Image (cartoon, rainbow, N blue to C red; front, top):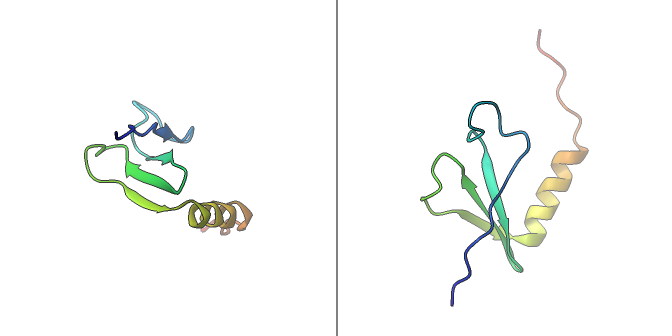
Length: 68
């Protein structure tokens, strides 16, 4: 039996209908990622440990200086 994914959308998904972002679904062995504008397309799946490393790296990076 296949259990459906429970998709989560970022709180930073933009204005309007809030569909200009990616969505993630956590599974025991992997994380699925999809484009919220094209939910019927196949998601990208990566191992949970790799996703955790990726998110940690994003959180610890210093944002680039403004180019104004």
